[in-house]
Image 1 (cartoon, rainbow, N blue to C red):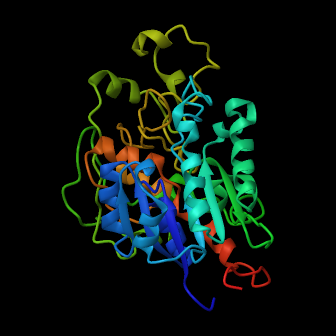
Image 2: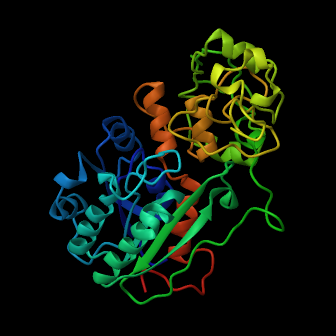
Length: 375
């Protein structure tokens, strides 16, 4: 690579995609998000970038160019993931009528003026069916009208070393006429083994229900290459505090083995609404993680009533740091705000390792035969 390539991250949140692009070799110049806590995290962890806070509707393309010290056409990559709640399968009233469905038009507004060479847009699986496909068609059409050829793929985070089952729709495009490529899987059958729950969190300090870790020090050595990588340059363990669960949930958890779920809880201990549930329903509710498996999709609230968020051995739910490990955030990444706000930041993020794989593909670092953005 002859020069450091530039990026701006819209709807950046705490900065998972920015961190991935930085690891790939990009110079991230600016980021924007309306969430104040996420913005505080981003500003503290991306000191080389200028953070522009507030709704994107209130920020002009000129603001971004001023922050990045660039003119139209000079930016290499404009990245971002418009808020996904309107498209999420967990939002049962999702659809194109939700005003959040149209925030991608703000992304297009910035694209039109900045005229970046490449664009990256990420979103949840629900975008494929939102408005019976209208959202995807609107995105493709919007980019095409601005002179961009765009393609999209469903990427599985676990295939890029992320220890989590996570599916995301990724749009990649350019105005240069270069071929559009997506990252090739590195983990899975016939490739490197998946990164497991044990690989991700087995070195973290033990906690009781409701207990917080008050010392920065690691108490054990790293037990996997993944842990060594995420510990690098970190002063210690941060954001490692278990939410306080009610006594009835402690009783329920004692009955759940590794890999088990609500089905292992005696009927008389189940929540009232679940006592009549069919055995095929709510498959991951009150799920306990298995050391040798993958984490469930990390959401903005790791609530054991809704998914497999119970520690493999300890009768408690996950901490923000464990969720961050499952998202592939380095340990030096400290999430500002309360535990609740930390979970939101982690759950909304693009896993840095997935962002890195996308960035490396664009840079041609995996295959020198691929055209470089700098060409």
